[in-house]
Image (cartoon, rainbow, N blue to C red; front, side, top):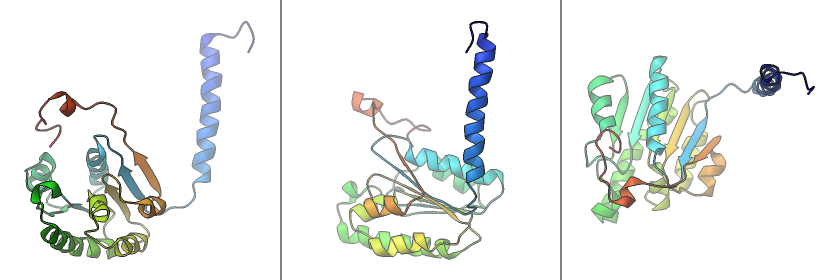
Length: 203
């Protein structure tokens, strides 16, 4: 950098280096296939991120499957919208609500297995461009579903199918299998300050 170089010139030189780096990384990515994305961590926004990808896929008129574990007892905004406005999306909820509310392990295992019976055909069907498995990690953490069975189905899905799994935990094997793992950290949450969950934001 010279003393006569202007702010605009310095900015342009910096951005040119950044562009060269980005272009190099794009050129190196030659494997064209579906991806397995794991959204985990103790922070808020995992499911919201997954539903953002649903919107992206809808923009291209792709076929989408959405299966929600855990949730379903309390009505949610995503359920209302998908059922009423997006009939082209195959949407299924386990419907038992949170496991700490049911307190019925046998019932939860049966519900999880019934729900997995909906998931398995999706993971074998190449017509699905995107499959969302919301809160699936809990089914593995609580051992409601066989881990090896789940991992095998995810690993052997059609090559062009992308899958998004959300939820806390889920085990190291799930992380190892995933192509992309994003961990959302809980820095601060309104709920801990006594603020009620808000319709259209939290559910």
